[in-house]
Image 1: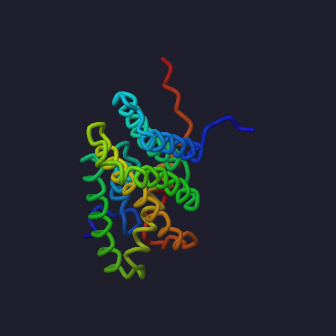
Image 2 (image 1 turned 30 degrees about the vertical axis):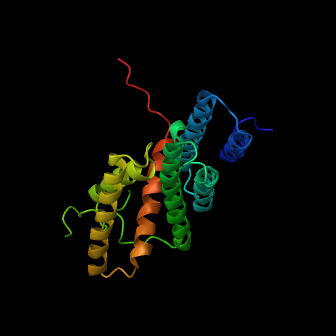
Image 3 (image 1 turned 60 degrees about the horizontal axis):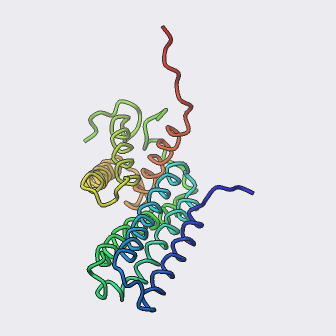
Length: 138
Length: 93
């Protein structure tokens, strides 16, 4: 079995982390803002890492279905953070919740746009390039 | 338009190289919301639109979306091929 982490694994880890942050908040924890701020920073880096891994993987394949999967998963990671943070961003603005929400929104839009463009590309997946379109030996 | 062709395609080598660079800077930007990424995306889309006009003037029967999809596919293929290319050894003295 391969021991390498996939984007899907990262999505699972991020979801667990989100659940932890939300559960802490519901229990009225943490009392200290430090811990909460650390959790917010960790979620931020989760978004950025997911995006960078998606870029790394996307740059290594021309398979449009695979590209759709990559960008969809990255988009879902951002989306899950967005959903969880939507109601919380006003409750803890002092801990950077609002910035986290904005970051997740920007990255969700960026990843979803890439997903959509590759999805649209699938329609022409089987189409041959018109002979006169591209230079020869490009 | 039509300048810089001379290589048999409606899109010249030079234009294709420019498209690949812009696509790389926007699609695979390390920071998707950076100014560089946004500028590259805008330039890429502008160039694709311009080349599409040229293509239909040359009788190419494609929709704008189809044209863009083929251009994106070609750019993706070039970038992936470059990454998978084995590194060249530096010349020995």
